[in-house]
Image (cartoon, rainbow, N blue to C red; front, side, top):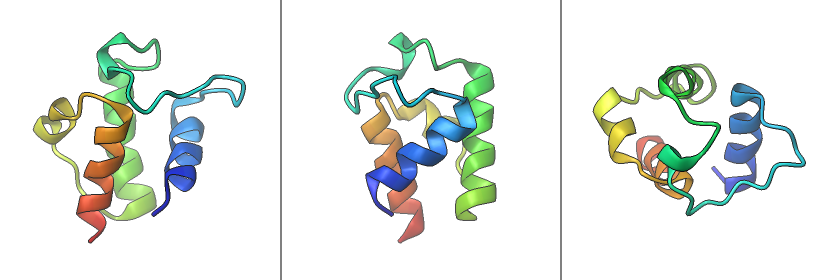
Length: 77
């Protein structure tokens, strides 16, 4: 999976407009697009789009978008 595909799915899932720049190194906790509801949506995205399971602990350990992307990638290999 490439970053671009992940970013597109993330934008669709979290309803983030294209005009918003997603910084891969921004702390998720500092993002206006991150909350407990968004975390649940990310877990659903993992299941529905990628057929992988992500635990709450794994999600909590992902501090940035890049770490979240790497988590998804690690589950796909």
